Image (cartoon, rainbow, N blue to C red; front, side, top):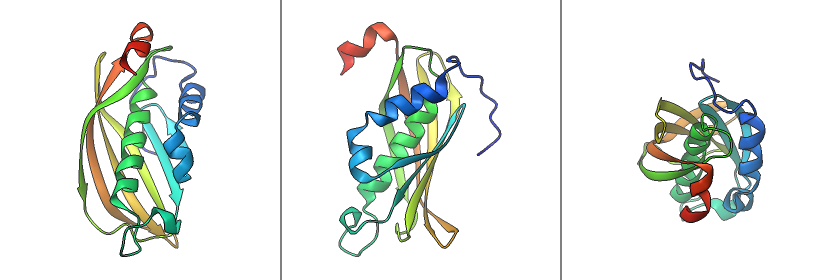
Length: 154
């Protein structure tokens, strides 16, 4: 976990983050779990399963993108006000190596937190035997939805 220079606006940010993440059907389907949470930081992990691979037997790029999106998005969520929500506005992913490992680890961090937009990033690592290899990196923009806007956006 990196040194966190952010002050969360929600004193219950960790419980709120875990509660929101538990409602992520895709993350549940993929077997993704939260490994760590801090203000402006979330780490996710997913164990290797054959049904998460592409034709060469590596983790599918879609899995890498999904966990990077969620790690970075939830890093932003840790800094959102109580009762608000966040949505991805855009992200760019660069694949740097095959997702070849026993598990994937995605570490999302906040780069800059504004009131409405939060810029985040995530690095995804393929891990085998404790050795991690960077396989993808993401830069993302997140929009904060005030409590009264949550229903209209979804």
